[in-house]
Image (tube, rainbow, N blue to C red; front, side, top):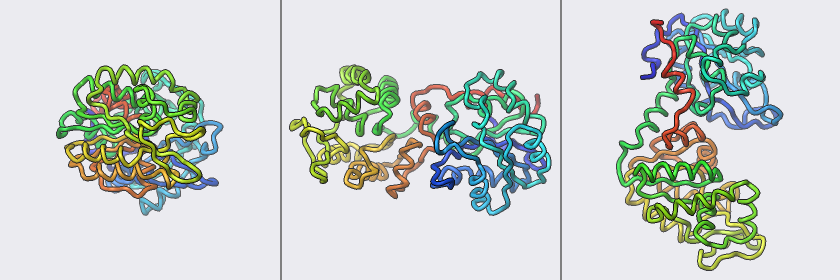
Amino acid sequence: MIPTLDELDVEGTTVGVRVDVNSPIDDGSLADDARLRAHVDTLSELLERGGRVAVLAHQGRPGGDEFVTLEPHADRLGELLDRPVDYVDATFTEAARDAVSSLDDGECVVLENTRFYSEEYMEFDPDRAAQTHLVTGLEPVLDAYVNDAFAAAHRSQPSLVGFPSVVPSYAGRVMETELDVLGSIESTGEPRVYVLGGAKVSDSIDVAWSVLEKGLADHVLTAGVVGNVFLIADGVDLGDASSDFIYDQGYWDEIDRAADLLDAYGDRIALPRDVAVDRDGERYEIGVNALPPQDGESAMDVGESTLAYYERILADAETVILNGPAGVFEDEAFQRGTRGIYGAATEVPTSIVGGGDTASALRSLGIEGFSHVSTGGGAALRMLTAETLPAVTALENGTDADD
């Protein structure tokens, strides 16, 4: 069992808290604070119980436009927590240690973007991660470590797997909830339906194989680029534009895997019955039997026939697990499939949504009412295929307060 905040004697304790607040950045400012909001409960609890909190997080990727400091995150956290939150432009140096050591009970500091340091952009096993500069630099000023960054738990970077080897470690409230919900899918009600859309074709096929082999899925509904790959695997001619996109994205080999899945479990896999394309600036729907579309037209959404078909399946479901939009939801003309499928899912007794791009899509479309919306995209997919998450394993195997 992984220790939680219930087992941490917080008052007067200096706690390093790893969160995932990697957010869209627009002109140097936060464009979406959803990931910060997710961690408010964990941080508030620690501060209200008298903890001295040092926040660790990453933002962006080296060379990218969103590879910025965490100063705006600290400012926004202060507003969300309704208390001052300091920021220091260091992560493990003497300046960082001084900032952490100077905290009083109930005070919080955000340390600098962990990815500003090369070690944090590499993968290590926990013992080696514990020897990195980041961990050895901060460990002397920490009494405990809390990992609340479920969305990054599928990675094995020092800030995620190194501290549990040397500091008593605990799961934060986000991590605890995610593991409870996603780790108990097999106990949810049946029929159980998986909706796999979006553009993460390889990951979605991995999920489909896993849940179908283990008998976890009564139905798998396909949409988005995932659905297009399955249609091609089923012999449907989607036209050059859609095929070229799949090829250019490196998904062409996935067609064979999709075909193997259809051979093995075709009776449980639902494919789109029609698709929507952009024809002369308007949404135009084409039945699968009437494909291919005109030259230059791509399948950008599922059509009304597919939506009705999928809604009938969802109407009989007890549990639905969704990952990925049904189409190019950024274009208002092609939001219909995503709105329809996800809207129907909210009527299912248990509805679980994978995080990442899916959660962002739902926020932008204003769709609410799910049982659980995960904070993690890749991490959630790994849990759904019963793969281990390095950060979770590190917590399971870590030192404890009695060591």
